[in-house]
Length: 248
Image (cartoon, rainbow, N blue to C red; front, side, top):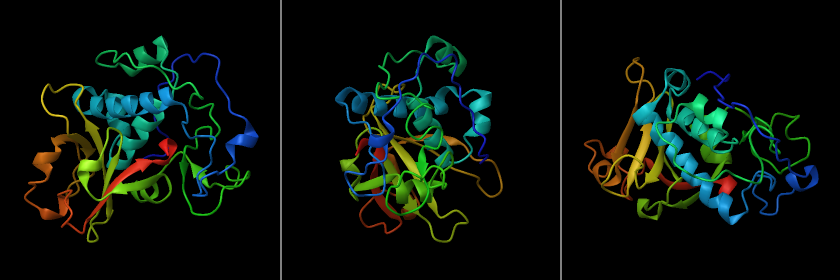
């Protein structure tokens, strides 16, 4: 996937910025700074709403521009993550060509790309947090599934029933060229009237052919003909349910 990715910003209002000092404190000691974390109750509710809506909308109503960007499972996550943090101005909404207005509030702590990490939203290597991390390349715009797993999420459970909207399901298929794969738990669909356990994901390339975004209910995925893709406890390839560090 290209590292020069689409950002439909539109015309942004005056940006909210974070204190540089507070941004690089790591109160949890897990290598992810406090600055980007969403600590307000409303922000912690609105981010998963936007995150799941933006991901699921790519299955139902993707534009030609976003199709060219979202070409694997990690790209779908990056796209939804970044566009959950923007100021969703009228210009952004028009440019994003949303199928409908979901009516969610915006994140208030900061707006991408004016937050403490700028455009470099994803941690890419281990180690303690330091004020020179951005300059030293510890955060980048790009993150593959392995990087999302190792440095930008934390495990909740290996039981998929613990997933809440916005969580990620990770798999590791050792014999594949790209062994790590992620799926995004939507929960109740914004488009389907039935069920509350929907999952959306991108297949990545299949046998040299361009892959596609798919949506499936957890119950159906539990019956996948190939055990390796079932999110169940007796599948060693299923790594578990993970939550984004930004919500920790």
